[in-house]
Image (cartoon, rainbow, N blue to C red; front, side, top):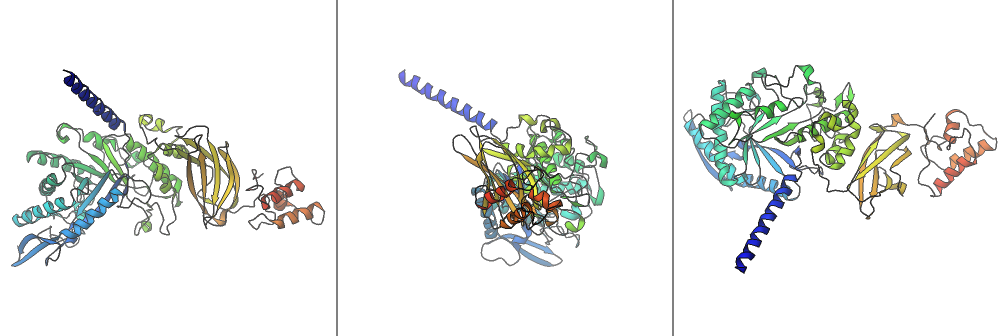
Length: 584
């Protein structure tokens, strides 16, 4: 009896633990932040996507590490095909290594194909990518083996396998010749089913995904109507025995040249299923559509990812980094509020031709590797710190909080486990010498009270403490830049823990201004400035205009010994900078 009672206590404890872990899992924050490419570039991205041109791993001669796919006869010529399994394994290992060294939650692989007789369609010589041949017996045999081997080798490396790209735009991404939408869907679904069948043995949780561009009810450019395509695909899949496929949508602002999507209704977009395009403005149309009974899998909505998106940094004839970052912030928070969408993946890490020549600057870096504001924002967008950083963007939407713009925003539980500090400022993207800058730090996640230290880091990475630890969370100071630099705030909490926030400052000589104390305007404070003020005091020279204003450090409308004392204290190291008042 005693043993039975003890056993029941153990069972009760186990049930309690299971419930606790279940609740923890339900409350755990699952970030949707993603970037195309295996390398997350220090951005702590949780979702990654890469392209795999599968036909580049196939040849007709075999070799070490190759396995036989089969043969195809056309025009009296028989070709034997072999798959580079060793090369695919190395590709898969690269993905696995990336996951070990990062916090990736999901990896998506887009499977693409170039023209290859028998393996793909060969109806056109102009298309860059082709459909896998599932309409001839030999093609079915070859591609069934191909999909099984691919799933066997890569199945455990990735979570989503996107079967070709933007399939509603076949002539650009999945050439299959001139076919009716019914035939097109029939052959495409057959390829997806082949891959899914292979994945079931390698990774039961991996999913085949259908890629769509943002055109919805549109046949522009030879497209198939994406809405009709999904309905027909779902019906075909159910008829053959349903499987758990999902949708990988490409959601951009409309048009692509405009980073803002809040006014996409001006482009004729609506928030109904009849809309021509599904952009970030009306992405809820897709999530609602996927809840239709005919689209569900076993009564539940299928996985949806935003597998490609981006925001143009070019606006109104110039590069506008802040606007680009603001629109990314809004889009990310909007996607976070939609539980049906599992990931939000940004495409461009750097501007690449031919896009800049088309007025498109989606990169987080420009072509010269100059960092844009969106890069720094992306590091923190999925944390509590990100909310602090994005406050300054609310002005673009005429609201005072994100909750005013996104219903339910306050209920999103961002990562609050990190002691973090946000840094707001009133400076522009580019700073010159002599500019007065105000920084305000806002910390969270630590033990109050907080102490703040401000540091300037020059282009040679030499650090100068502008203001040492104090309770002052706001610093107003003159910055005497001569090259690109960094500014850092260190925050120490009551327990001694320290967190930091660094911002990159781009130097622009066109924005140079004279600094108070720099009387001779040589971009430095030194003994020469003391000598000039001294000569003015002794009557040897008379300072006027800008020189007199620069000499009047304390703002009492005269240049005297008090002003000399400021410069002397700086030169001797008693103070770290000379205070800068607002110019009159």
